[in-house]
Structure formats: structure tokens, C-alpha cells
Amino acid sequence: MRERLIRFMSGRYGVDELNRFLQIFDLILLLLAVILRGTAGKVLFPLAFALLAGVYYRMLSKDRYKRSRENAQYLHLRSRVTGWFAGLKTRWQQRKDYKFFTCPSCKTTLRVPRGKGKIEIVCRRCGSRFSGRS
Image (cartoon, rainbow, N blue to C red; front, top):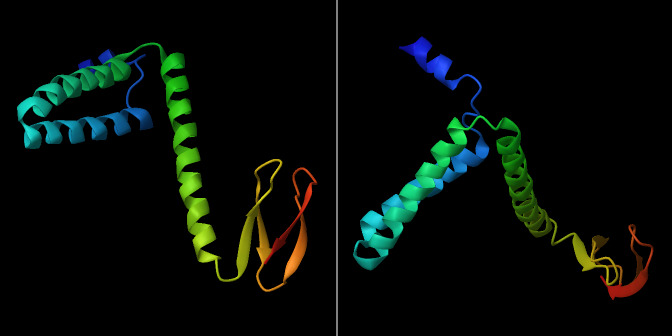
């Protein structure tokens, strides 16, 4: 039986990070459909089962190139979101020692030590100058 499953899955894409995320999201939708019942449940159940069908389609697909591109796009988006939250966490931890400015021309976040008074700030990325109070 195990050998038959291995032979069936050979050449197929399998499970990746995007599939794991979609499975968790699908489970949450199913739980919401059970909890909410009524009209919301009637809408969420078919949506959850369609999503589950999409997860199995991705898992059993033989178009490995297309599925890996979809996964790479998901990982890129996820890293941007988690990186944004990591930046917020870092800024929060450093808020007593540094003041943060945004460059008016390129929108880069710049860090300046606190307690220096009014200073002229030079952007490292674009070289524009602006003043601010640290």
C-alpha cells in the first residue's frame, strides 16, 4: 500500500508552505462556519470546501514549476509582512535611545541618537538633507 502511494505521488508537487497556510486558513473557515451557523455558515461552508479542493489540486498537481512560483510569491509576501512587524518591534525596543525619521524624498527610515538637539540629517540612500529635532 505504501509503495502504491509513493508511486502515485511521484512527479506530483506535494505540500509546501502555501499549502500549509491554506490548510490552516481552511480549518479556521470551517470552525467559523460551525460556530456562526445561519446565513454566514451557509456561505462559509462552500467557500471552505472550495478552498480545500484548491489545496488538494495544488498538492496533486504535476506542474511543479507553476506551484513553486506560487509558493515563492507567497514566501516573498510573508517575508515582507513579517519584516514589517520585526521593524516595528525593533523601533519599539530602541525608542528610548534613538529617534526615527523618514526621508522626505525616498521614504527610508533613518535612526538618530536622542538628545542631540536640532540636527541636519543626511539620508544614506539618496543623499538628501533635512533637519529634525532629536
